[in-house]
Amino acid sequence: MTELSAQHPLLTCVAELGSTLDDAAQLQPTFLSADEKATAMRELAAVEARVVALRMRVMAVADDTAEKTAARDVAAWWSHETRSEPDAARADERLARSLDRDRPRVAEALAAGRCSVAQARVIVHALDELPDDVEPDIVERAEAALVDYAEQFRPSQLRRLGRRILHVVAPDIADEQEARKLADLERNAARRTHLSLRPMGDGTTRLSGLIPEAAGSRLRTYLEAFTSPRRAEADGPLAPDDRRPYGRRLGEAFCALLEHLDPAKLPHHGGDATTVIVTIPLDQLRSEIGTATVLDGEVAEGSSVDGSSAGAVANLSAAEARRLACTARILPAVLGGDSEILDLGRAERLFTPAQRRALRLRDKRCRAEGCTIPATWCEAHHLVPWLFGGLTDLDNGILLCSHHHHRAHDDRYRFIRLASGDLRFIRRT
Image (tube, rainbow, N blue to C red; front, side, top):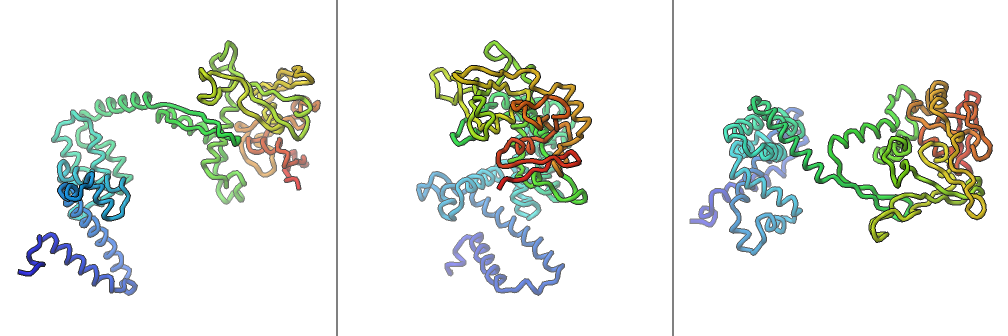
C-alpha cells in the first residue's frame, strides 16, 4: 500500500484540491467571457467558504495538536504555524467550536457554500445574544431563518435582521424579551459611562470615554447642527469648510456647542452660576500678542492632593480671548496695573437676545463672503471691538459662523467690508 493510500481520506482530498489549484493557476482567465467570469467568481466564493468550513471542522477537534507542541490552545498553534494574527486565530477557534457544538445548520450551510464565513459569524453572534431563557426550539427556528436569509442578505443586513429575529420566529415573546434586553443594555451603559479630560501640554486636551447610546445619538445630532451642511455641486463649488475631515468638523462643533451653552441653566458651581473666567491685562488684550489665563477650571487628575480645582489651568492667546469676549458664555476679567480689575464683563458689552434676533432677521446667514451657514448657527461679532470703543448695536454687529468668527480674531487674517455688507477675509503676507 502506498503512502498516499494509507493516509486519511480527508488528507487525500486536500492533496487533490491542491493539485487541482496548481493546474488552475496555469490557466489564463482573461479569455473567459463576461458570463463565464461571473460564474467563476460566484463558484470560487462558494468553494472558498467550503474550504474554510472544512478547516473549521478540523480546528474544532484539534486540541491534541496543540497539546503535542505545548501550545496554549489551538488558536495559538494556528497563529504560529500560519503567521496569522492571534486575535483572528482566536476568533476562528471560537467560531469553529460553536459550529461544531451548537450551530449545526450554520455549519451545514457553510460547508455547502450557501453562506460565507462573515455571514456565519453574524448568525452565530445573533443566536448567542438571544436571552438564556428562550426555548431551544425557538433558537432552532431562529437559526434556520437566519441561514435562509444568508442567501439574500450581506453580513451588515443580516446583523440587523439578527437583532430582530425573535419578531420573526416568536412574535408573542419578542416585545417582552426586547424590553428586558434594552433594560440590561441601559444598566450596562450606565455602569460603563465615564469621561476623562487630559491636558496634553501642547494646547490640546484629550477627551475620551463612553456614554449611553441614546446620549451619543443626541450629542451627534447637536454636533451635526453646528457643522456645515452638504451642498450639491449644482449650488457651486464646496466651501473650504466642507473639505475639512469629518472628525475635525465634529471636534470643532463640540467646541462651538460648549460656547453656546447657557450658564444660567447649568447647576451652581462653588456657590455661583457656572462660569469660566478669563483674565488678561488690558494692554495685552488690545495688542496682537500676549496671553490670557483661564480660571475656575478643573486641574488634571493627580495634580492636586484632593483632585479639586486649583486655579489657572490653561492659557489663551490674546486673539482667542478677544473672540471669546464676543459671547455671553465667557466672563472676561480685564486687568490694569497691579492686577486691578478694570472690567468684569459689563452687560452692555454683550448683544442682547433681542439684538441677536434682529441680526438673524437682517443677515440670515454668516456674512463672510461665499459662506452659506444659516443665521441660527452663527455668533454675533463686533465689527469694531468693544474694547476699542465699538458699540454693542446693530450697526456694529454682524453674524459669523464659528469658523469665520475664529478667522475674524486670527491675527493671520484681516477682513474688508464689501458693498454687499459681507466680509472678505484676506490672509496677511
